[in-house]
Length: 168
Ligand code: SF4
Image 1 (cartoon, rainbow, N blue to C red):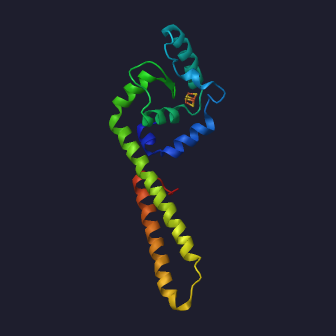
Image 2 (cartoon, rainbow, N blue to C red; image 1 turned 135 degrees about the vertical axis):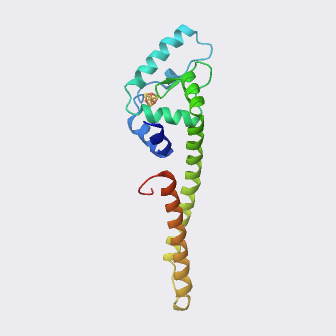
Image 3 (cartoon, helix red, strand yellow; image 1 turned 90 degrees about the horizontal axis):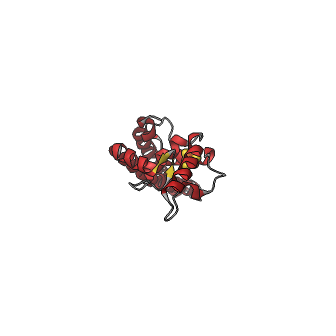
């Protein structure tokens, strides 16, 4: 995955890719984390085993991108995610700090936008389903048009910002 592709990939898309293809589904989750006080040699073996899962995983790139956006990994060698050790993730996050903070900001904005879209759609459906009396027809049509225009504006902004052809 190139950095441009990763930036444009919205969090739900990345998460869906991991949910559909995670190679570690059958593995014990503890395998990916160093136990408290676990000796280095024990952890090294465990880490190698965990990385073996990741290296054959079809969702590795998406998983790594989510790990970077989630802030996983520190200077302590104590975890594996997305085919990287915790220290590798920390180094990559530092090297790509600008791109990752832009991706996180886009994820957050996208969440707020999604809520707005859902809210506008519900309002539009409610307005369209109202029992209309003739004398209120013009006012009602105006309100429906207004909601439609608001929805279109949110969708257009979303398309323009994310580079996606079709707004989800
Ligand atoms: S890359 Fe590794 S941690 Fe991520 S889903 Fe695949 S196997 Fe699991």
